[in-house]
Length: 202
Image (cartoon, rainbow, N blue to C red; front, side, top):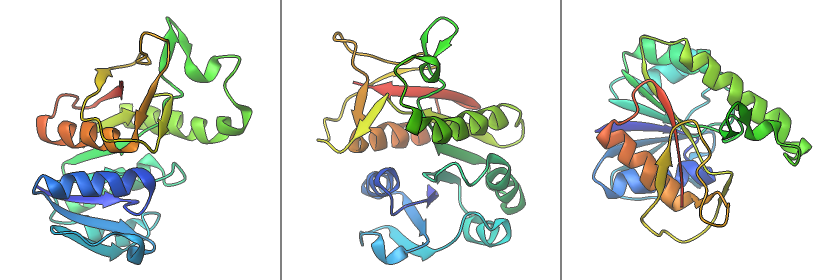
């Protein structure tokens, strides 16, 4: 496939770019500072500001899918309008974990030990997902990570869920950026969660 990765110089975006290219996809890696994107076969690094809908439309036209690894200051409406204008049918989003349930009716963000300094950013992800759920034209997928996503080894395995936080036998919820990228690439190729949210953790 021909895939545009937005925010391709970030921690998630760079791993997703690398994983997709390694699988033989043609990747347009979009970042404000494209010089920060590692050179690799199949990767074309380009400068772009995803907050500019007209410029974004031009960058993504002709692609089969867009993967957004952006912060949530770029809204769902901005991305969706650019995809519509460019005729790109699929959007995959690196989401947040805060809206995942830890118990029936209780989200992670509602937990008493949820860090206050993360709350504003987390609410951006919740608003983004709410906006996607109203979208019926673009085929979107919102990929919430584990509660803790961090630098770590590429283990090559993970477990998935939908709206419930995935935890291990010790109650921990974590995944490396490398394995998150594997799960994102798998979703692109296998298309298991159309117009839905999913999550993954060890």
